[in-house]
Image 1: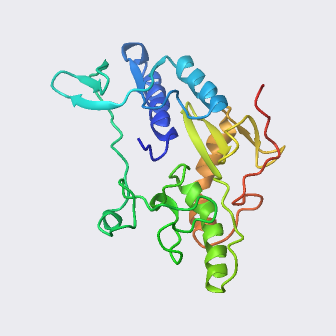
Image 2: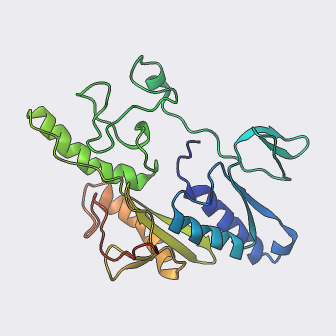
Image 3: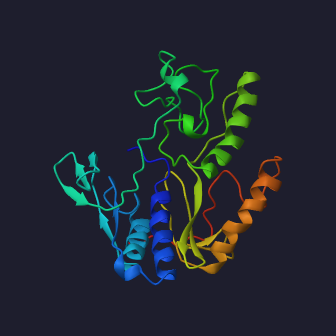
Length: 256
């Protein structure tokens, strides 16, 4: 911990499963997903869906495992509490931290090199004339490209307000969305923020891409996003109906 993007290692497992199945050797391979989290994901509805997908694909899940040692010679992952998981091949996500220059600047960052940041205004808690975005922040949001994109709109508006001596009226709600490749030409899509976990439904509205469900449409959407990134987002254009604030419409409320 912290994990830069919690779904990325899950996606690796799903694609590995698909790769072995395509070659007809899946029955000869054991896949195990080992995570420091208490489930496949941090939010209940999404965790239930993704844990179920791991089970359906025959991928074992080991939770609350904080790796203290990787014993390559003996093929063992050893947790700080003494538990062990054996392996022939271990794909390990290293500890994620901030930039070295933040650590070298006294008072700018925390012990991991992230800048303490107001999670709504994205103004630094260290200096009022510093605004923070993307991987540099310590806010409780995924350090993913979609988050940095949504933060950008808020940061731009608040910098303008700050320079004009006006109150910072733009607020980031923690909006994040992510395609998750599930293998076999299918993908899932999740959309959430600080207060709303990834839910089933559709994005960006009642009619759109299915949320938290494997579909060919989501896979094609992920492929199309590559073109949108280079030709729409980087030149500074907006994607219609996709904004920094998470849309509430189209989502199914969680069961009570």
